[in-house]
Image (tube, rainbow, N blue to C red; front, side):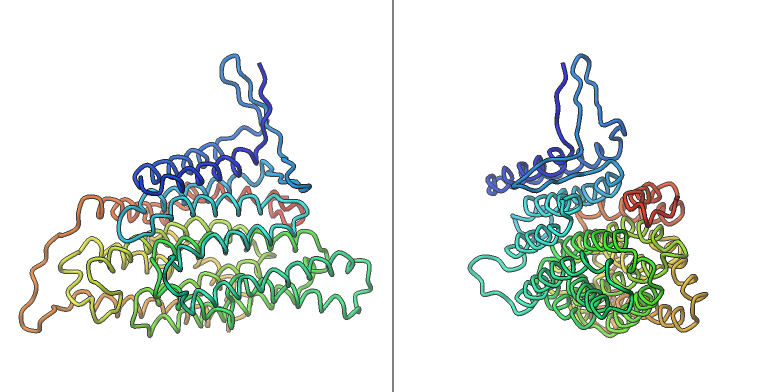
Length: 475
């Protein structure tokens, strides 16, 4: 007996159905968390070990999968080559949903996060590929209720987030329309530069590149850290992969040395600005928002170094970034719950009362900063070294931005170990509950193992690059 299905049915329709069920069971929070986390984890494992033949046999039953699914006159095609990336995003979604019951995470988060992952997965394979812009915008719209709860007036940061993310869509669609006829034009045509400029503005809006970044610390300061850490990983990660489509499709972009130089400069500027702003923050959640700018900078730098193998390091960086973001979001939600505020001045003596959370928070910050032995170190040191060879100024400014993250970490450490009352040191004791410190300790071990053995944990995702035939560094 043979059953015919499609890969989009598995990784788009099934999680959307699970998200709707979880949303309907909103009052049964444990059920919603288990349903979404198990669904996401199962889809991650399935994508990781899915056979290249697209055929799975269960005794007498044979399930044959096609790569495409028609929907509303369009086609969603999830090719085998893209499955490592899909496996990664569903795995990290399962982490966020499974731990969303701790802290003050919105009840809608498990269902909404799974739905967002399904939407961005569809964006990876929709044809024509420009319709991905509409799916990503849908994911942004779906995220709004988590950032601005019903019954409360929308905050300025959320309005700015929605505005800038929505403004990106017409720029992307217009650029796609212009680019469709550009390759037939002579190289000196002004339309080529105009098309590239419009595309650059659209991508910059999506990735919150300076000066379109202002919403990030504003939203982070007033929203739940689990929500913001998930969104600030998931949407930029998919936008970056979507952006590679343009380099893969259009020869004049791919072969333009000026484009790669601009990306390198923009990346280093983002690293320097993000690290500099982070160093002087007085609020942990705002510091996280600015630290995310440095991560965007490293992504741009990696693409700018594509000719030196930067795309491989870009793909390796994404799962390491996800682990660091999750740990930071998880601990920040608990810090805010226990301390009553994320301001540094309210964290005096926190390490004495909650030493495991304090250690986890410091290591999450140091992982993002690229500290040796932690998950992001191998990729970031390679990117900075390569940038230094390309231009001393690039490497120097990138190092300055990274030092800004280390400076903030030192300030954070000083506040957390300082006694609440001078002259009367607080005794050190472990006040964390079992469900609080076990995930932290487990992730700290994973971050260290990933930093020590990156080839064992991170390199599988680089196979995603084979989906971009013109960019594939393995050819």
